[in-house]
Length: 266
Image 1 (cartoon, rainbow, N blue to C red):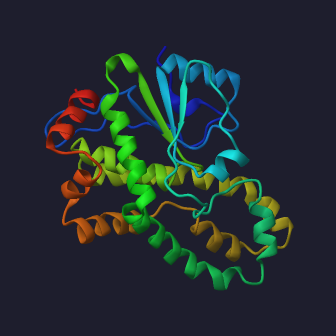
Image 2: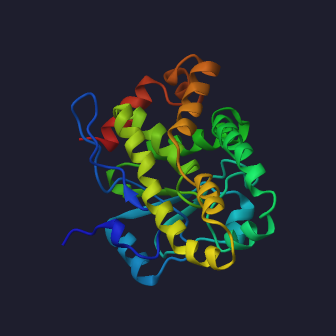
């Protein structure tokens, strides 16, 4: 029976990005590229499932602090490699401290939220321009290019599997020739998982006399949004001229892009 990654209960926001059609008439191969949230709560059962699925390499985009606070569970036989995009934590996530943060900021939260949107826009732009981010994505694509059929699948993740992972997935799918509408569709699937998490904590927040309005407005800062991804790709065009010049900056020229398509499409 074929394993459905989305049935793995200890890993949030996990999916194979295979199956999308390319503009060249090919299909992104399955069991080659998997994205997810962090693996700090990974169960033994789900670890075994990842092994059976063919995962051989895990790429962790989180900062050193994030990895120290919530380290991935080790999986025997799978290499887990740190590829930090930022050297600090810049992105809001729903974790065990969410309720404490909402309570402590109750009075200032509504004033803070409009700035949070601008903060996220700037964060996405920084994923394009930040020197550390450039080095990380250069290493990420080098890794993808070095992996052949015999090296199994790659799972890449950050904390929520939303922003850093979402941008990385968009870059990969764009390189492989996937239509922008499908790239955006994959990016926004994350919101299904985020909404589930929000629904789980909402009853507790209401019992603490945090209003539904505040919960809804705060929740918006945790969602993947089209304008965030747009901001990153607009920065690519603004700073580098076009997507292909940007990929060249990451060490992915036309020959490398063709090799990526050979490896990850069929």
